[in-house]
Length: 350
Image (cartoon, rainbow, N blue to C red):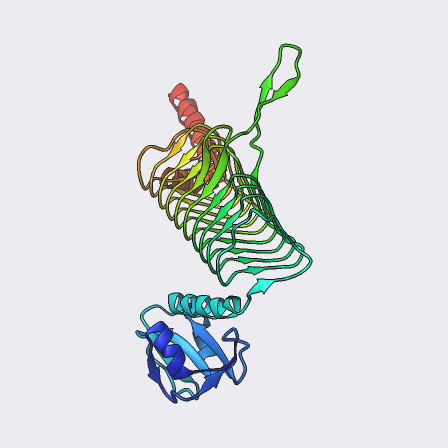
């Protein structure tokens, strides 16, 4: 597919600087792009490549002042990175919308209800009473269990498993290999030292406009629902345990884990490999640094924590700065001790 600078400018509300008729057919990094490709510049560290790239079309910030003339056509926008993301999203939607129909072999139970303009890939399985909205895309080797509901415009990538009773909202994206609705980790200790499994009879509810990365696991609730609220974004390889709630527009980076019944507020940011214990609350706007271990509730909104156990980020930085000075402080202390001994010796000789 080819698009002109004018067409792309209309999509991202850009001002064209140069030849508006120039066309591009693919994307490229600004340091590697060739003629016929579109690139973008958002990070000032890459500005030198702006004057050497072969890209035909470049998205840049409208505030950027050029140091020399360019042969490429420019698209000026308030935020180049955001505009590029919008363009990629539009491009992806165009490609995805072309997928329609039901491939074979696949299994769709006779009680399943499928909407219009859907795509169901080969070897997909749709169980009893499954309900699909319109424009749903289900890629090959996907399992959709009994009584699952999936809203309009949702994309389920290859190998995803959505188990019984789960509810998926509109415009959700779930990437390859993720499992939604597996059993929560519930076992009751017995007098003889063994563990008795606690049946997990709840479900998972994923609200609208959520994106979940590859090979993540979101466990069903023991009773009630594990809930991922609207606009939340979860990275690859994340574990969300039973009865957890993740708030609106919260983001969780790869390899993080949230233990059972913890309530994560809205607009929370959780770094990679962070671990959060169960049955606590994380206030709105909290930022949890990578590899932090959160062992108690964070009740004050917009708190920033780091470390294990996690504590105030600013205090942690001061502690780190002091710890780096310990060898120097030890040396100074030793010198002071020697000086004190000399002074005592002088006093004794008086």
